[in-house]
Length: 131
Length: 350
Image (cartoon, rainbow over all chains, first blue to last red; front, side, top):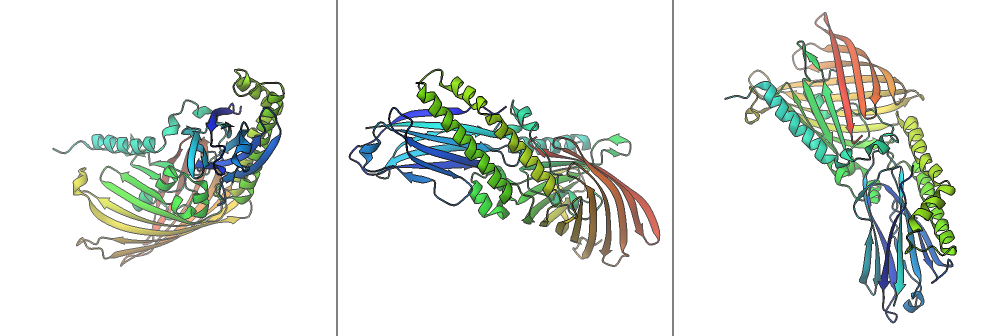
């Protein structure tokens, strides 16, 4: 039986007149980690921006949100993560999502240090962006 | 006053057991049963520290994919007593503390370095280092499996996103107390379990296909001996180095070739004795059980050459536990004598 999807949510305040907001994903694990990032309109399911990726390559998992920054007011950032035990030996993981603006970190969401308990585990990070 | 031998053995085993437990904290997880049901083992490789003490007859150092921790206990029945005469633990320190899959894939050599320590009959200690030059069976670097698992991860993420959209259209947001339950129900309806189950199947299939994949390793080890059971009287007794390679023999077979060079003390206590060994081992079977035939020739300074041959059977007793049985003959100066071994190998966490 797959583990229930964990949900980590928070409201994040940013400066409407500030610079670009960027999202960075960090995986501390030897497990495979995949992600789907969606920026959705306020009070709706319309997806403004979407990115997918994983932790097996050298590409940076950093994404700037649309500019100017105030466009993102009241939007919701959804990041769907799935960790996969590729060897069957289990393993620890910690996934962090950092939101920053003008090189200043606004907030960090973390899964916390976990040990995978099934072939795959999912986490959803939800950030409500507010000015 | 010298401690009784059995007491020293218990102390040493306790230390080694502690190393295993410290290095594998999740083995004690209350949900370990979940993991047990999803694993398929590769056979546990030989530890160089074990081999340098000659606890296991046979000179081919068996290569194998790195695990965080592996334990070997050998020769349970000696002189009528049911006690192991040898105990070894091998661990991969960088793998244990590794935190980046990307770093692993970019530099697997460092992550696969293994350190081993072993004891024999309470008066001999071994320490070894193993370096893996080639490992085509490593699931962390296996390209096809990785691509398939990433695809499963992406599909799982997409199903989560679809469920979130469906819940939002029904007015159920993350702030709602119903969210978690409704999300779980939605994912069940979308058969996300099928995706999760397919991970274990893909992993098992890959391990079955890769059990005899090419592997090349180099190892170094030091053996030390004490006249009594006090560790402070230990002195170096021998040094050994190995080169081992494994290659597939068709679909169901594997050929191992090994070279070992040792330097030993002579009667005056100087390192003047050399020993070279050439060995070969052929396996036939599958990942979970296989028969093997092995042979070797040992060349020593100023002595006659020794030839040995054994036939054996290796099988997975249950998850993480492997048994290695072998009987054979050793031939020297026109005389032959029977040899045997029984080794239990345990890989953790399981």
